[in-house]
Length: 418
Ligand code: NAD
Image 1 (cartoon, helix red, strand yellow):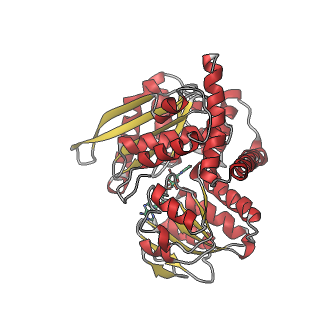
Image 2 (cartoon, protein in one colour):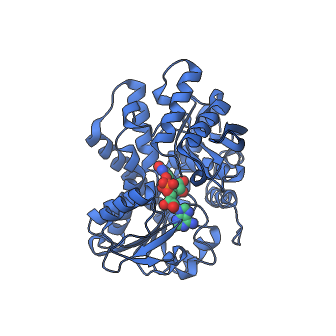
Image 3 (cartoon, helix red, strand yellow):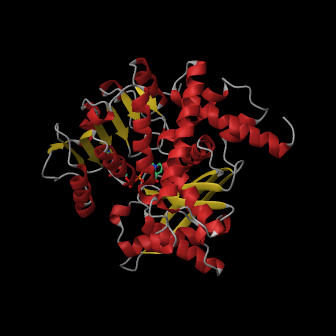
């Protein structure tokens, strides 16, 4: 097992894949095929800063697998973006789409940049520049990007517009997570966090944890963390701690989550919220609660932080928040880990509805979207639990096994033989 604080997300992803594959009898070449991406695109993007000076950024798009459908995955703007990180995130997308049975493959994109140091106009130039660099490899039936860390509907709107200009035609189905006015689904913004909350409640029922009396802590209060917290708060759970990159807040009686969300939207951070005590960002691992939801970035639950967690369940809102070493410690301590590929799949499920609505000029309405989201997630939870119980294994490996079975079937179907 790879160990140490410096483990890369790619090492974690490869380790998880191999661990599930070794329990299965897969057609020859399946593991080889899925351990490396179909294509890696690396580009240099030049933009002009507001003061007229040029600046260069490195961007990536990794198309991991299209065995089950067009490549699909978000685009991340973050200083820590590397080719290896994007490769890991792309592989997780392939596994996630297979697990929740949406007919997409896996991809991911990223630009190494610090959005906090860029103005709105510079962000727009960078978003458009990224699309100009890779647009030949995108398309509504080939590779469909979406938002991720630091890229919300606005960034996707600029990208969709640039893509349309380059193609000479408006292609709304080439991106999901667009602004509502450009054909986005209102439910997409909340979908990942809402799915995290829904999965948390589904798991709570299975372990006889009464969610209306449960306590919850969160790392990350962005798109995923905020909507997960709002839904869990609505279900009666007490959200007692929340952090973001700037700091954190704590209230033993339960935070007023809608008021905190409003504060965070207005100020760009959770700290400074009046009805709570300040909490040092990294102390979130020490707050005792029933459920901990990491909803920030990779490699947060490690050999160092896992022993500090005093929680019954970890629901991975973020992608890759737990290193293999951290996971082994949680397992030994009897902490249930609900894996990212299951917990945060709500976004790609609703993206699929956005995309099919555009493909068919139809659409299923808000109630239909909510129902569809629940149906896909419930099926994936049931299948994962069945495999976990059958083999006596943890949920992550079971979820990978469900996904790998579907991918292997597709591989055999494409080849026409085992
Ligand atoms: P976001 O940019 O909206 O929010 C990220 C949050 O994490 C922010 O509050 C930020 O301040 C915080 N953060 C960053 N580093 C931190 C640190 N070291 N300690 C504490 N907080 C920290 O991003 P998001 O869209 O919410 O994505 C969060 C995670 O969820 C990522 O791993 C992403 O890949 C994953 N995810 C997102 C979606 C989606 O639809 N947006 C879908 C699936 C998975």
